[in-house]
Image 1: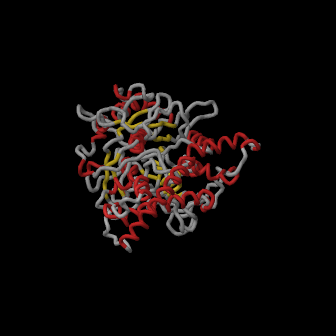
Image 2: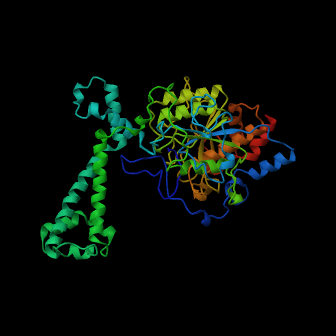
Image 3: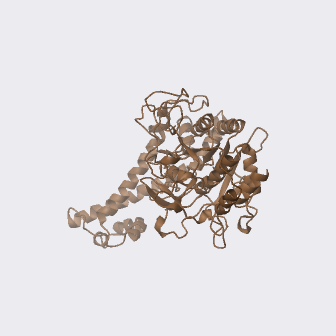
Length: 524
């Protein structure tokens, strides 16, 4: 989920990579904003686009002479935000009692938390975590030293061992080992072909083409066999490609695989550098105030969807530009840690957020109870949480999907709303997860344009985009009707959602409708 997940650009931040690399539930390259027509389609409702009818909501508000009674703080638990973005600076939450002086001015336990907090950095700021891998791989790696040579028949803790084997399967370790073994066979073939070519031509220049090298062993049966082993690579590269470059690409890939395999036992989890106890929900004072990391693209996008000011293009104004954005960096490239999500929720609640955006999610959660207790804490303090349903085009009803937000009685907390993505025609977005029981509502999540680091805009898809749209509408309702409780706001959003044939039966509600929501709130 991750970071659950917007489908974003060149770094393919949320694509499913090869095992042992960072994974979230979604991703595809983004399209440049300039190629998108109707750049703010998601706000409108007409014959050509099934957006959220923000126009209708604003017209109703104007007709009623309504004024916002409260500025609502929205906590964004994500990868961080470009706090220098001219579209976001006016929207950033400013901790009223904190001063940037190297001291904990407001005595909340966090030094210089002017706009929020970073739970993925060391206290001295020397290290900020950006890549974390999948939860399945982390759990496999944690238990590997204990069970790496275990005889199954002698294992005493059967539950833990079966969990270890489950994580091993989910992480795809055996498949990766087979893939590595296959590449070792390829490596032997590469080396032999290269040695034959050197014997024929001497030191191979970088300009030597693949076609020339493959012709150097004509009549040599072993050479022909080696060519067959790397045949797919040769076909992809083409006969005019540089042999040396092809060989270097192969060896770099093999080296990376070896590094990843060695890291299973050799490298500690970098998250341990934060200095807290990962299993202790009460150990909350860790991290640093650095909110802008190298991987903050996802969070910057989410922030703009909610409250971007549209300085460079008014069409890219957020759904609720009056909202105040509290930035909580807790989602690395890969699956988020339960401890960080739990702590970030509690920070947001304690510091005044009334809506918390969770554009994240994952399939394995070793400390799900810790997160659910934080959600219960938010419920006690009347805070609404909005979470992304994920981007695997999967019915999540029959599977585990986290945060589960389930109370002790097995019911979903009434201050928690899960969001799937729809397209401009009112159909489920191709990547979006769904579920009549576990998904509450749909919101636009394709071809959405928002802020990107460096004062740029970009366009992307994903339930991570649909989620902040719902968070923004929730913030708008809470701004105009601050006496409404979090559970009531959720009920309003679901009950006022617009039925659509495409999403029928795939969630509790239909597509979010800001106009109907604000009207229903007035009658509630």
